[in-house]
Image (cartoon, rainbow, N blue to C red):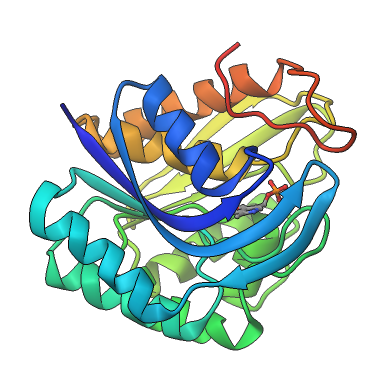
Length: 259
Ligand code: PLP
């Protein structure tokens, strides 16, 4: 059986983070494993508290997996601090994992910080060069490139800058852009731009969309799909999941199930 590891934070409400990742791996037929970076007290209304793990505890969990089970692909989600990022990067190098999906999680939709500001430099310096693909939304790409993104030209320039930081591919997700009709995701591999277009869906059930998308992408890579096919299937997965109202919670409901 193909295996995937998520190195990410826990969402007690089950909509994002480790919980979304493991559910997504399961739904796509991949054996899921986790190394926890932080515990959040969280529900569909927001993040009530964040308790980060010791970097040594994160490293130890990864060692337990690397020294016995191994993995076919890895994703990183909420990493919270520079120390955790450096511990994770060191282990990815040690185990020579190549199918590495970096979801540069920064801020929850409700505004809670999931990555300390001073950790952004470490993310760029240590983790992006180890990634097969990085999955920023537009606000995250703006932070990574330190430039505003408004137009398609801006998106292409941002993708080029992110590849220069060392990522092999970037998928710049359009969910936050201003187009009311469509959501356009831009994939770039350093040579070719590929645009994935889909109809924009109006819903408040968007909690965990980023985690679910990057987990679906990781599952696809674990199963041996080429990057563009894994992106396309992950996009179909999140597109289907987002249409379905599970009726959970009073705020932004979760999206981590196939319709
Ligand atoms: N909580 C955790 C632990 C996460 O990893 C993430 C996103 O990556 C979120 C919350 C963000 O959730 P939302 O989709 O509501 O912004």
